Image (cartoon, rainbow, N blue to C red; front, side, top):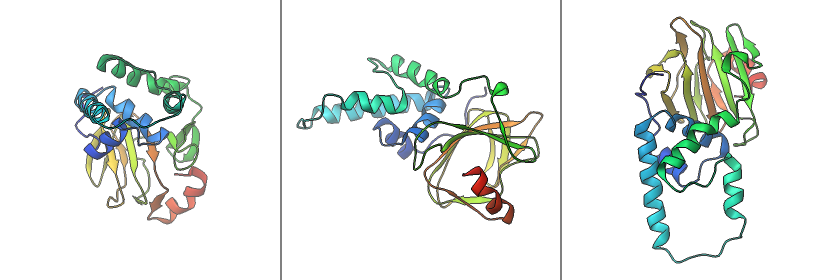
Length: 214
């Protein structure tokens, strides 16, 4: 996998470090950080800063099982060091994908486009998904009613914002409109989580949305 050149916003990394992202978006950020030393280091730094601030704050009573419930939401484990945290992030995506990418039960969406929904909670259930599109195919033009996090796991695509390759993460919000189209010799496979439905611009996109539920 190539060295990532597109990364999450610092605000998104801060929300991840503070535990403010929902399960679906947290999985995408963790999967990116597992292959991006730059973002992994920034998360570790933000977590350290957060820990120092907590130590300087007057303690507040919390239930005995609060930590366990929080960790259970993402399948994470208690870590005592940055290396342990990195290992947990690296293995997190494997807990959601039950087979190699080529062997998953891909569902047809449109010519050249398939998806595989993963079980994770977000603004509604099942907003974490893998989307695969063949070279020359893609997702119809759309903007965003909320946040869209897209991690490229394989292949590459072009859109209005540039070129994106394996390892890159697109952290997009309501002021972005794009139409990603795969290019190259292999299908493009993306891990996507959203915090609200997409706003499609074309009739095809609007027609497919009830079926795709993006």
